Each structure stands twice: as C-alpha cells, then as structure tokens.
Amino acid sequence: MLGVLEEEGFAYNSVKDADLDDIPATYLGNGGAFFIALESGELAGTAAVRRTGPATCEIRRIYVRKDIRGQGIGSALFRSALSYAKGRYGKVTLKTDSSLSTAIGMYLRYGFTIVRKENTTIYLEKALS
Image 1 (tube, rainbow, N blue to C red):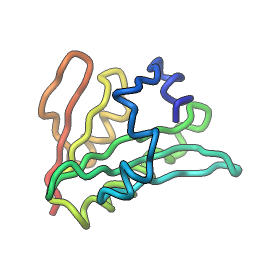
Image 2: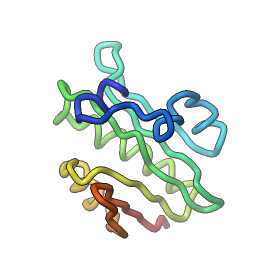
Image 3: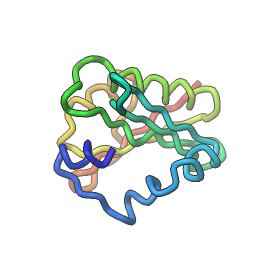
Image 4: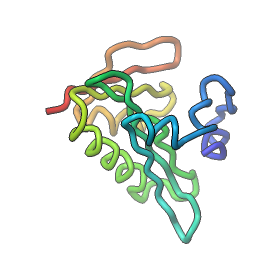
C-alpha cells in the first residue's frame, strides 16, 4: 500500500496513516473489514471499511498498483467494501484527493455525492438502504 501511495506522490504520514500499523485492530476489531486482491500471488490492491459511528462507516484505502490499473481490480475492491457496508450501516463516507479523478468518477457513478471540499481533499457520502 505504501508503494501505491508513493506512486501517486503521497508520503507515509505517521498520524494520517496510523491505521496501517495495526490493520486487524483498526478495521476487523472495530466493525469493519479489510479486502485485498492478489495478482500472481502478489498484493495487487486493497480496500477497507472502518466504523465511524453506530450507523456510519468510511470506505478507505482503495489502492491498486499502478502497473495493473485499468483491469477492474479497484472497482471490484470498491464494490466489495460497499456491499459490506450496505449490510451493516445506514451511511457511508469517504474522502479522496482532488487529483484522483478516475476514483472520484467511480464514486459518483455509485451514487456518492460530494459534501465538501477542503484544499485538495474531497469528502463524499452516500445513504445506504
């Protein structure tokens, strides 16, 4: 995952990325999930769901290695995370960088709406039924 961050020009931040230090406790132990995709036995991509409140969650950590993008891996991971959230929460949020236009387009196609923008961060949400 850190390699994908670096490919996109983002550096590891010990505060912002602290969830990566203990994935089981952050996600699995807190009403969430962590999905991985493998390609030829190597990590190809990830997606995560993290509980943020009694009826809300956040989808995050949607990463796919640059060398295998465009094959539907990111969409499949995102759909898995969204499906998991639908069965457990009433609302899902996510945030992304404004430079990631392909990801933003995917989120909008799946019914997310932009609720605010702060500098280069875009916040989206979707009511689940």
